[in-house]
Image (cartoon, rainbow, N blue to C red):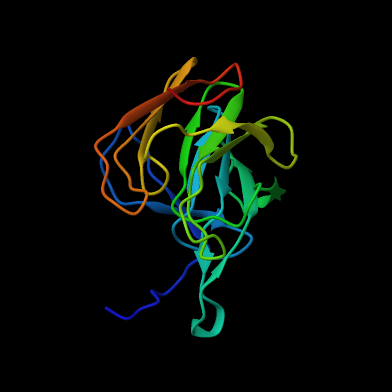
Length: 173
Protein backbone atom coordinates (compact mmCIF):
# COMPACT_ATOMS: atom_id res chain seq x y z
CA UNK A 1 0.00 0.00 0.00
CA UNK A 2 1.35 3.40 -0.97
CA UNK A 3 1.67 6.14 1.63
CA UNK A 4 0.18 8.64 1.73
CA UNK A 5 -3.01 6.89 0.64
CA UNK A 6 -5.03 8.06 -2.33
CA UNK A 7 -7.40 10.69 -0.97
CA UNK A 8 -10.97 10.99 -2.22
CA UNK A 9 -13.61 13.66 -1.66
CA UNK A 10 -16.40 11.19 -2.39
CA UNK A 11 -19.35 10.77 0.01
CA UNK A 12 -21.18 7.44 -0.16
CA UNK A 13 -24.35 6.21 1.51
CA UNK A 14 -26.12 2.96 2.31
CA UNK A 15 -29.73 2.19 3.11
CA UNK A 16 -29.47 0.54 6.53
CA UNK A 17 -32.79 -1.33 6.20
CA UNK A 18 -31.55 -3.28 3.18
CA UNK A 19 -28.39 -5.04 2.12
CA UNK A 20 -26.33 -3.91 -0.82
CA UNK A 21 -23.40 -1.82 -1.90
CA UNK A 22 -22.85 1.84 -1.12
CA UNK A 23 -24.01 4.47 -3.63
CA UNK A 24 -22.55 7.84 -4.58
CA UNK A 25 -23.94 10.74 -2.54
CA UNK A 26 -21.76 13.67 -3.61
CA UNK A 27 -18.37 15.16 -2.70
CA UNK A 28 -16.75 16.92 0.26
CA UNK A 29 -15.26 20.36 -0.43
CA UNK A 30 -11.83 18.68 -0.37
CA UNK A 31 -10.66 15.08 -0.14
CA UNK A 32 -9.16 14.01 3.18
CA UNK A 33 -8.74 11.15 5.63
CA UNK A 34 -8.45 10.87 9.47
CA UNK A 35 -11.38 13.24 10.12
CA UNK A 36 -14.57 12.58 12.06
CA UNK A 37 -18.23 13.48 11.74
CA UNK A 38 -21.19 14.53 13.91
CA UNK A 39 -24.87 14.76 12.98
CA UNK A 40 -28.34 15.53 14.27
CA UNK A 41 -30.41 13.11 12.17
CA UNK A 42 -30.88 15.73 9.43
CA UNK A 43 -27.44 17.24 8.83
CA UNK A 44 -24.00 15.64 8.95
CA UNK A 45 -20.88 17.71 9.60
CA UNK A 46 -17.45 16.26 8.73
CA UNK A 47 -14.50 18.01 10.33
CA UNK A 48 -10.72 18.01 10.23
CA UNK A 49 -8.50 15.41 8.66
CA UNK A 50 -5.50 15.21 6.39
CA UNK A 51 -5.44 15.84 2.68
CA UNK A 52 -2.56 14.82 0.47
CA UNK A 53 -2.19 17.29 -2.41
CA UNK A 54 0.80 16.44 -4.56
CA UNK A 55 1.92 13.74 -2.11
CA UNK A 56 2.37 16.02 0.92
CA UNK A 57 0.20 15.70 4.00
CA UNK A 58 -1.66 18.83 5.06
CA UNK A 59 -3.87 18.79 8.14
CA UNK A 60 -6.97 20.99 7.81
CA UNK A 61 -9.50 22.64 10.12
CA UNK A 62 -12.26 22.54 7.50
CA UNK A 63 -15.83 21.48 8.40
CA UNK A 64 -18.25 20.41 5.64
CA UNK A 65 -22.00 19.85 5.95
CA UNK A 66 -24.75 18.17 3.95
CA UNK A 67 -28.40 17.20 4.40
CA UNK A 68 -28.50 13.40 4.74
CA UNK A 69 -31.92 13.19 3.06
CA UNK A 70 -30.80 14.84 -0.20
CA UNK A 71 -27.85 13.65 -2.26
CA UNK A 72 -25.43 16.31 -3.40
CA UNK A 73 -22.13 17.93 -2.60
CA UNK A 74 -21.16 19.19 0.84
CA UNK A 75 -20.82 22.90 1.56
CA UNK A 76 -18.55 24.80 3.95
CA UNK A 77 -19.82 24.84 7.56
CA UNK A 78 -17.02 26.74 9.33
CA UNK A 79 -13.68 25.92 10.95
CA UNK A 80 -12.59 23.61 13.76
CA UNK A 81 -10.70 25.27 16.63
CA UNK A 82 -7.43 23.80 15.29
CA UNK A 83 -6.03 21.85 12.35
CA UNK A 84 -6.65 18.31 13.58
CA UNK A 85 -6.66 14.71 12.53
CA UNK A 86 -7.75 11.59 14.44
CA UNK A 87 -10.22 13.50 16.64
CA UNK A 88 -13.34 11.87 18.10
CA UNK A 89 -16.85 13.19 17.40
CA UNK A 90 -19.88 12.74 19.69
CA UNK A 91 -23.27 14.40 19.25
CA UNK A 92 -26.85 14.94 20.39
CA UNK A 93 -29.91 16.07 18.45
CA UNK A 94 -28.60 19.68 18.46
CA UNK A 95 -24.90 19.79 19.33
CA UNK A 96 -21.76 18.15 17.93
CA UNK A 97 -18.55 17.94 19.98
CA UNK A 98 -15.06 17.14 18.67
CA UNK A 99 -12.80 15.70 21.36
CA UNK A 100 -9.01 15.73 21.23
CA UNK A 101 -7.13 15.00 18.07
CA UNK A 102 -3.58 15.39 16.85
CA UNK A 103 -1.64 18.01 14.97
CA UNK A 104 2.05 17.73 14.06
CA UNK A 105 2.30 21.46 14.85
CA UNK A 106 1.71 20.53 18.51
CA UNK A 107 4.07 17.79 19.74
CA UNK A 108 1.46 16.13 21.95
CA UNK A 109 -2.15 15.11 21.44
CA UNK A 110 -4.80 17.79 21.96
CA UNK A 111 -6.83 17.78 25.18
CA UNK A 112 -9.23 20.46 23.93
CA UNK A 113 -12.89 19.80 23.11
CA UNK A 114 -15.01 22.14 20.98
CA UNK A 115 -18.65 22.15 19.88
CA UNK A 116 -21.05 23.40 17.24
CA UNK A 117 -24.82 23.78 17.08
CA UNK A 118 -25.43 21.50 14.09
CA UNK A 119 -28.30 23.54 12.58
CA UNK A 120 -26.21 26.77 12.63
CA UNK A 121 -23.18 27.14 10.36
CA UNK A 122 -20.33 28.59 12.42
CA UNK A 123 -16.86 27.94 13.78
CA UNK A 124 -16.43 25.73 16.85
CA UNK A 125 -16.68 27.07 20.41
CA UNK A 126 -14.64 25.84 23.39
CA UNK A 127 -16.39 23.03 25.30
CA UNK A 128 -13.76 22.03 27.90
CA UNK A 129 -10.78 19.70 28.24
CA UNK A 130 -10.23 15.95 28.24
CA UNK A 131 -9.07 14.80 31.69
CA UNK A 132 -7.84 11.34 30.70
CA UNK A 133 -5.74 9.88 27.90
CA UNK A 134 -8.43 9.57 25.20
CA UNK A 135 -6.95 12.38 23.17
CA UNK A 136 -6.53 10.90 19.69
CA UNK A 137 -7.79 7.89 17.78
CA UNK A 138 -10.47 7.27 20.41
CA UNK A 139 -13.83 5.75 19.46
CA UNK A 140 -16.96 7.74 20.34
CA UNK A 141 -20.59 6.96 21.03
CA UNK A 142 -23.40 9.20 22.23
CA UNK A 143 -27.08 9.68 22.91
CA UNK A 144 -29.10 12.87 23.51
CA UNK A 145 -27.31 13.59 26.78
CA UNK A 146 -23.98 11.83 27.17
CA UNK A 147 -20.98 11.47 24.87
CA UNK A 148 -18.49 8.69 25.66
CA UNK A 149 -15.06 8.12 24.18
CA UNK A 150 -12.91 5.07 24.78
CA UNK A 151 -9.43 3.86 23.98
CA UNK A 152 -7.15 6.07 21.96
CA UNK A 153 -3.74 7.28 22.97
CA UNK A 154 -1.71 10.22 24.21
CA UNK A 155 1.59 8.71 23.12
CA UNK A 156 0.69 5.37 24.75
CA UNK A 157 -2.31 3.14 24.09
CA UNK A 158 -5.14 3.84 26.58
CA UNK A 159 -7.94 1.74 28.05
CA UNK A 160 -9.77 4.70 29.61
CA UNK A 161 -13.42 5.57 29.02
CA UNK A 162 -14.32 9.25 29.40
CA UNK A 163 -17.63 11.05 29.12
CA UNK A 164 -19.18 14.48 28.80
CA UNK A 165 -22.68 15.82 29.29
CA UNK A 166 -23.35 17.22 25.81
CA UNK A 167 -25.97 19.92 26.68
CA UNK A 168 -23.60 21.58 29.20
CA UNK A 169 -19.99 22.57 28.55
CA UNK A 170 -17.23 21.40 30.84
CA UNK A 171 -14.31 19.02 31.20
CA UNK A 172 -14.66 15.27 30.71
CA UNK A 173 -14.99 12.76 33.53
